[in-house]
Image (cartoon, rainbow, N blue to C red; front, top):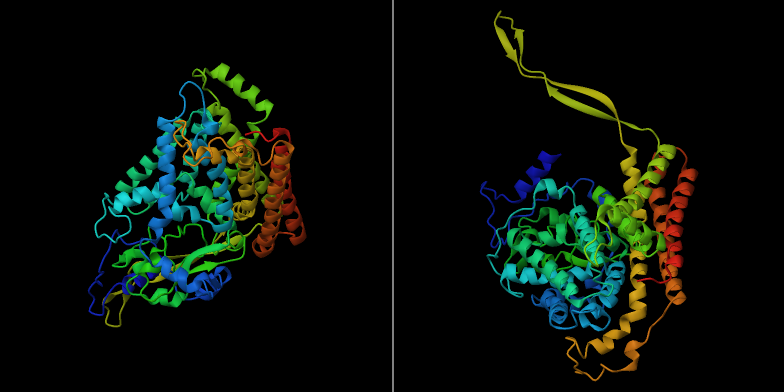
Length: 568
C-alpha cells in the first residue's frame, strides 16, 4: 500500500515529459502526508463528511468567503488578544505589590484566571480550535517567523527543521505532558490562587518565548501542533464542537489536483501551518481554522463545514491511540485538581513534604510525587476498567496474514540437455495471528468520555468565574495597579459583587458535569453500537456494561464537587 500511495503522489507532481512539476512558491518543505487511494473513498469518508458548508449559506456565505480570503483576516483576529496579553505581561511586572499577593484586583490575574481560562472551555466545546485562530502566543511567533503581519513572504526566518518522525508518532502526547508540567508550575507558585501577578506575567512570557524559539527552529506551526500546552486539550475536547473545520467540497478534485497549493502554498497564501490536507481531513482535531487552504485553493474547493455536536467523537474515520491516551491523562489531571481541594489531600501532601524534604520556604505544594501519582492513578482507572470490560466481553479474534517471499532462481533441465535458470517464484504462506482487542476497545471508549472530561474542566473553572469575574470592571480602569481610573469604573461597587457563591456554584458545577455525562452516555452508546457490538460476545451486555462504566465515572467526578464547597 505504501508504495502505491508513493507512486500516486509522485505522478501527481510529475509532468508528462517526466520532469518534476514546478511550484511557483513554496514556503516550507512539502507536507509529508500522502493522499488516500481513490478506491472506496465514498465508503471511507462518507460517514464523517459534514453536509453544511457555512460559506454556501444564504446571507452569510458570500461575506464570510470574502472575509476569509482576505490576507489581513487572521491578523485582525489575533491583534485584540495580542494587545490584551501584552497588557497582562506589563501589568504583572510593573503593577501590584511584591510584599503580598494582590492578584484579586490585578488586570492580568483577573482576565487570565477568572475569565479567559473559563471562556476558552466554552469556546472549545462550541467551535473547536477557534482559540487557535486568534491565539496571541502562536500568532506573535508566526509574525516573527514570517517577518510580516499578513503579507505573503517567500523566505521565512526559520531553520526549517522537521519535527522528528520518532516524536511525531506520539501525536499530541508531548503537548499533554507540557500541559501537566505547566499546571504543576501554576499550582506550585499559586499563580491562579490568585497569587503574585508577576508570576502570571512570567508564565505568559515563557509560553511566548517557547513558541518563538520552536518556530524559529522548526517549520510552520510545529509548536502549535506538537508542543503547545493547550493543543491536546483543545484538540480532544473540541471533538464535541459543531465546527468541522475547513475541508474539501469534492475529494475527487483534491486527488486529481496537480499542485496541492493548500499544502505547499502559492502566491496567494502559505501552505497549511498545521500540516493538514483538506483532501483527507475527517475530523476537527488538527484544523487551526487559519483559512490558508481556502486562500490557496485554485479550484475554490475548500469550505468551512458545520456538523452536529459530538460528530467527531462518535464517527471519525479512524480513532487515534494518542488521543485516547491523552483523554484519560487529561481526565486524571482534572480529577487531581478536584482532589487537591479536599482535606485528605492536604494531609497527604504535608506528610510527603516532611518525609522528602520538598519544601522551599512558602512553596512546596503540590509535592511532585503525589501530583504525578494521583494523576497516574486517576488515569489508570478507565484503563483498568476498560481492560476488565474487554476481558469479559470481547471476542477472541484472529486474523489471517499472508507473507509473500521470493523462492530464488531455480535450475531446470532443457530439452537440449542445457541447464537453464528459471525466474524466481513467489511463495505465499498464510498464518493465523491473534489480534489485540484491548487497544480497539480502549480507544473507542476513551473517545466516548470526551464530553465528560471537557465538562469537568469547565466545571472546575467556574468558582473563579462566578465569584470574581466582575472584578474586571474595576481592573480595566487601572490595568497597571497605579491608582488610575481611566474609564471611571475603578471604584464601582458592582466590581466587588459575585455572580454566585457557595452552594449556588456547586449546583452549577454538578449541572455542567451532568450535561457532559449525558453527552458521554449518548456518544458511548453510539460508538458501542457502531463499532464494538460486532466484536463482542453479547450485544446487550456490552451496551449495558459500557454505559454503567461511563455512568460510574461521571457520578464520581460530579460527586467530588459537593465536598469541595466551590473551592478555587
